Image (cartoon, rainbow, N blue to C red; front, side):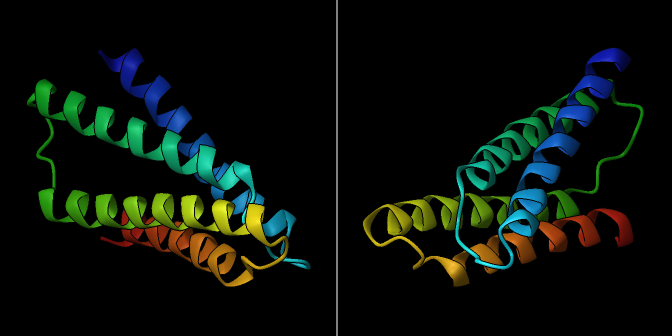
Length: 116
């Protein structure tokens, strides 16, 4: 179980890197890119799996308030990425605000994870 948790945690960090890295890569001409969507999906799936495995271990007490808030933020990133990609497809260059929101929410999730 420990190996599975470590692999999921690595994938979770890769998802985070995809969200924030994609945002930083296009920051001069901000727009929502597919990397943000893929990162959001990866973070959501691996985050849920990590919580499930931690609960199954019954060794570590899971902070459900923190997990709930992080889940809402992750869902918001996913929704923003989906809307931004649709908007970008219709009108290229029109998703700058949504790109900043996705990147900012990704950073917020890191802050919640570390500080709480």
